[in-house]
Length: 97
Image (cartoon, rainbow, N blue to C red):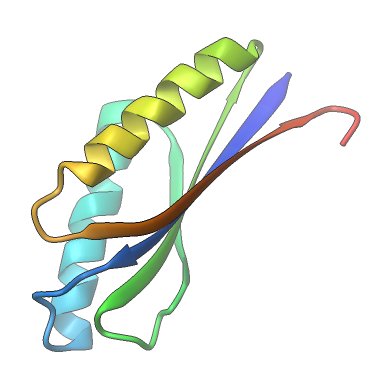
């Protein structure tokens, strides 16, 4: 069993308030959950209105499946019109980690 964790550092340039940012982040996280059946959480920059740190995780038996899903997740995020990816990082964790 493997766990994949993909973290995104995002910029939300059109956001002028925390309320607007929360709307964008909620839409993004809901879309990820429904399309890919992954766990999603905002993990950084909660008090900054043009930045967001989002983490996505999934569990599977094989690494190639996790890499494929996380690559599709990254493509989904990059296609969102209201966010820009500043940085992303993918890590895989096994039972021995």
